Length: 420
Image (cartoon, rainbow, N blue to C red; front, side, top):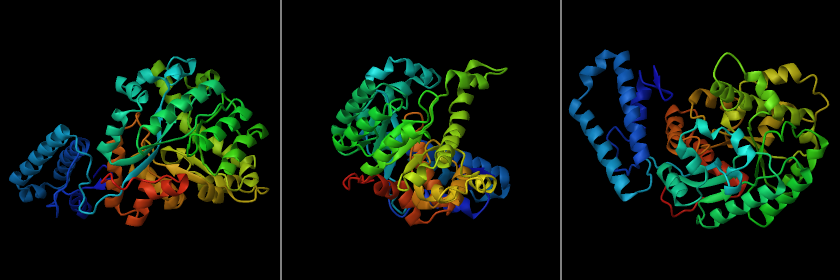
């Protein structure tokens, strides 16, 4: 039986508790409120699961020790909340800082636009919209709680006018300037107009210091494998910045395919974050490869999220079924996948998909991310402890995933004075 991807039946359980600082840590650790809550829940779930698997364990449980751990967690949570202390790792080996690069906001102008309605904010808790609109101390405090040193912020993806994109990028830039090195930016581009997209990307990188762009997966149903979209991709290569290809809601016609004998909410989720838009990004990346864009731009760097948008488990079959058809390409799809594509773990703190991702690519192409505020910073940060405990990556590889790979790709730096 497993809990949070950790086998609680044998030695891995004890190893995890030790690495989590719950087995007589060698030194006192400061635990933030979010981490305390998560560890307390983990401990309760895991002990319950262990007892179910091995009743003999009951004879070795010292109830006083269990109560002491619980009391300390509650005490530390209260003290951290009252003093607003920053998150500190609970492991005996200090955890590296984190850089997250799929995290969103929406501009004030966009909030009342037609596109905003398609993002189905009503299906999320009210705090999600509140956090999307915030670029101030509230956002920074959420980073502190999870030990995130830098958050690369992007506008929620949508196909908007050049004017809307410029206004939104300028608002984001003002927020970044006030964040004292804690925020960086991905540009919002008007992807329905490739010339305007080139102009806006150039402005954002050269004048605003943005570190790349995050674009919607299609521009009102049009994908980017056409010749008219070569210019924005070529400009990204010229500016030496990556393009983050992010899911976006389907067109109304495409959404019709997901209507069935169930509620409107189910249709929305199936057509978006529950299934379709992940698969849609995967198909789009294959379209880009098939159209030869990586032959024309061999230094193009693409980022995709959500543990690879279903592709890791399919790359071998794609090569087996399409490799002979794509003979005119200069490199195989697997080669492009491993050389030109970076993948974030955004919104997917699960060990199973991570193992598939790790098998399909190299650790230096894997990046930590949250998908804030749709996902919880602390939950994704805690997944780094699961990775360490699992042993599927070594310490150097874990450090790369947590921040060094992002530093190299984006040319951003974690502040050294944060104490994470």
